[in-house]
Image 1: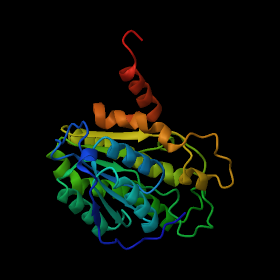
Image 2 (image 1 turned 90 degrees about the vertical axis):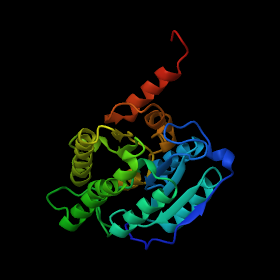
Image 3 (image 1 turned 45 degrees about the vertical axis):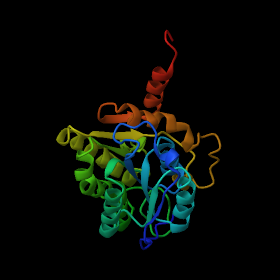
Image 4 (image 1 turned 60 degrees about the vertical axis):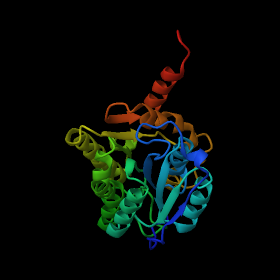
Length: 277
């Protein structure tokens, strides 16, 4: 897994034709579309969520560790909306501050999606992907917690003033490993469980916001492939398959809480079903 930390590049802002930036929103107006900050947005679920937000008229601040992948995502998204892309790692204090400042320049964040994650925090890509807790190196465990739990909390802290002013929302990407005990998933699962609990506490402390922790389910992603090297993941659904479920969050603003994408999908089906169905 690529855990290289890239120095944040000078941000670039791309503005699409204004017709792409005026969708139905709760927090913005045609003159001032809402702003979302999405971490881990260069591929997988993060990129799919960014695409959906762009299609719904949101302006975006996106980040990822790998500059080349992020640049490709930025080029695609900029055809639809205004995008600021900043490469870097969410565990870096200065990078998080840059993300908050970028969102402020666009008008202030109405939504934060903490999607960036690491499976095991190992700098050595040849390391076993799922080591048991008895032997997992403590530096790797610390990195796992920093990326998956502490950095999302820290970024949320920075963005809270913006989110409060816009009746905003925080979406933390969770996992079934946060609630189920799987051998080898101790570090990842414990970090995601910590993020889940932090989400629940934040929801109590910030009743004016929505705070969601969502388990997307097993998807055909790079992280999943890293967990099971050589496994055939072709039968798993792609990240795009859960986008309709996630869309219900920023479109309908359900109560704060922990959700599974499958449950949100059922909710979306009920909303769109014809009368009498």
